Length: 189
Image (cartoon, rainbow, N blue to C red):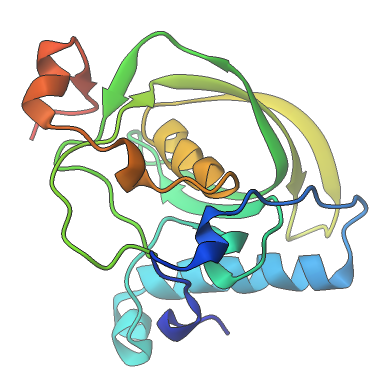
């Protein structure tokens, strides 16, 4: 079980290394890693469980954040329409990005960044991706090409950046400056 003590924090060199590709078919070790990462997300989003285990809530978790420099990340989040996305992503490549840039009002957060941050992180409103997706119910991995937009695209880009040693704080900017340059908040606060 992954706990907060297992999350690698800002300042650790592991978070700044580019991750390695993962061999397909997945090893049992990689499958276990994915299940444990998703377990953290499920537990962290359950108020009672999060309180009991002392977990910060998260919607995504990348393998480098638990000390494994492999191109794996997981997402458990609801989009703006309320649809739940459960993704176990392996060896992703963003192959197309929209010109429209958006940001989360109030800025992003990260389990690996404990400090208060001020500002927003620019993200593409829509992305097209190629990746291997692991289905936790069937235990099968399938190579897919798909598009994501809005909130799920932002979460995907945040986790994707972890695979290349980038944290959201690396590209943070003042919200007023962002608005003046034409960027739009994903929603109005």
